[in-house]
Length: 182
Ligand code: NI
Image (cartoon, rainbow, N blue to C red):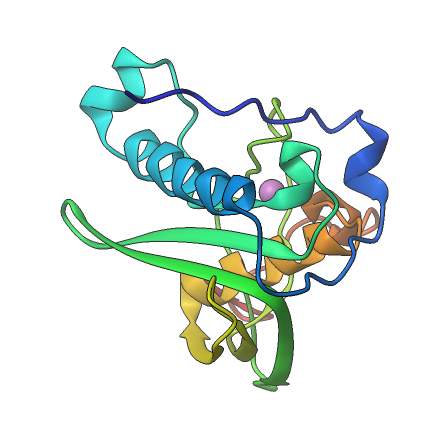
């Protein structure tokens, strides 16, 4: 049965800590939590379940948001109508990035931030991320556009950074001439 996750609010200090590297093998408890995060994120992006379980839509989650300061991120990307691709990455590292920057035109959201925050967050248009899967195998993902933003947003959580920390207070919004808005 589906059980909604308990996600920490932005005021919680655990969201501001640097999370620790994970050692393998990971516990059964962590594996279960990863599966619940995948279910939660998937359901949150399907209208019927979003309403039924009163979920806020989101595509990513990091372990510190569950009160566990370990370097694990989960992303569920809707690549087509009702088609989802899951990414579970442990000890993720951005190993290369594009020079080009982008920003989500509507701004970013976060399951730990229960309010609207206005402003564009500058992100790399493309990143290559290396890390490990749940079984400790080395994995590498090349992400672009929204998925690239999601990886950068979730990795920020592992370093105690929330998306609005990156909004320039003196210049909250960019035009399409200055930065590519997606
Ligand atoms: Ni977030």
